[in-house]
Amino acid sequence: MQHNATSFRLCWTIAAKELGLVFSSPLAYLFLLIFGGVALFTFFWAEAFFARNIADIRPLFEWLPVLMIFLSSAFTMRLWSDERRTGTLEFVYTQPLGLWQFVLGKFIACVLLLLLALAITLVVPLSVSFLAELDWGPVWSGYLATVLLGSVYLSIGLFVSARTDNPIISFMLATCICVLLYVIGSEGLTGFLATRLRKLCA
Image (tube, rainbow, N blue to C red; front, side, top):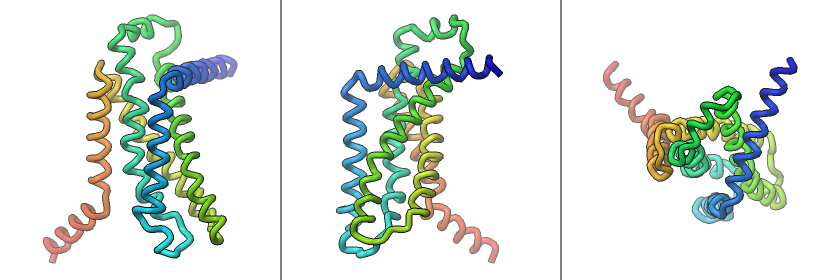
């Protein structure tokens, strides 16, 4: 039991180290600022919230899966590729820690960044709740689903980052894979395939 506690403490130490490295660069603040700005713009202007005259934040959750593709790819593109490019990956392999602790530590750091990004979007439901009565049940369940989906995106981004030493290539490949998976599960494609199947069975 004590060994497990020590192992997870080391994971948190690695996560804290990664977060420190991320926020030592202005890029992290830029990504978060752009994400929050685009989320607010799409909800209040692109989706014409005030013209809709409906007190819900469903349009936000319709856009978040798309926005998180780029955010997750940006968060993960350097985490392993920089280790490979600078040659510190071999140093990681020689450490007495298990490789899974490094993997989990980096993943925890990414999830914490994701939670911080989503916390910025809380401006949307809080604003709506000041204007009208808002049912918070669907809001929290929507955020939970968003965190789970974002974790999948982060896992894909970390996997791709571990396979290349170029952060830009990592960003592009992770984005393409996530976009492909999003399109496959989109309502337009699934509805089209369902229609085609119905016609074939008729």
